[in-house]
Length: 325
Image 1 (cartoon, helix red, strand yellow):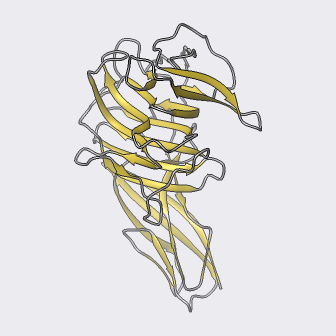
Image 2 (cartoon, one colour):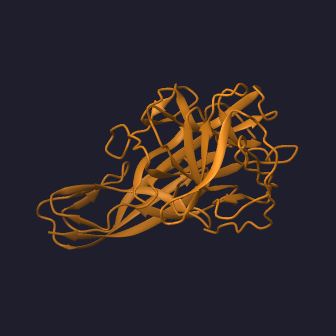
Image 3 (cartoon, one colour):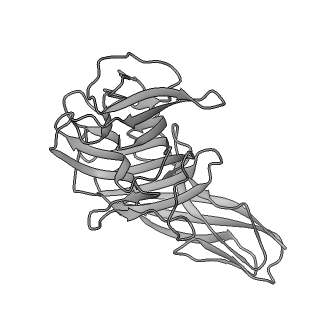
């Protein structure tokens, strides 16, 4: 399947003691900011937080937002305005990808959020949120249309605990036509998949958006922010181990990649798993992607295949798994 190569970047960036990032992009463009080079610094928009560019030991630069308690807007927002005076086209698909680090997790308030939304203006309370991922205490939190904030679970089904000072990569795939969102959380440095919420309903019914915001009531660090609209399809991939030993079970996941994001969740759909090149003693659950290797399975190669139907479009991916003793 083909990917869209998006051209024509139009971005104005402001970093001051109060507003971290303010970008205006056309529907043909995308936000791509890694904080390695300066932008056009301007006047502050709010006075309830401080923003500064810091560097890791390896020289990588990132943005740190710190709430300073001044009166005004309740929490510090880092707003990325998607269009100058309107909205993205009706029922668009949107990818939001970013790296995030929480210097502390003691606050029990809901904080450190990314919000994908429709908003009438900066500081306005007239806001409708389509998708959001936040932090409450030491956990990542999501929200669907029929549920309160729910803790993200890791791949073992346990709550994913945020480690203070650790960098995570987040990818959110939003489909406004079908009113669903999928969220994946990775270890930034190892690229290990840590959590996946696949096909969660949107927080509210919303058919267009004009802003993505990051907020905090303590502090939050951000890097490598990508916000863009894909052109319908992405390159599929399967995530899981390239080997499996006898008398074990291994879980596989269907993800995607494109020009700007190495791993991200696919749109919601029905997925069927199968073994295209099978071996005696090796099987896969057609609904869950759980590979089972019996004790008597012979060493060799199997091909795991996943096929997902999203509306009338079919996504397929394959990966080779070596069976060992």
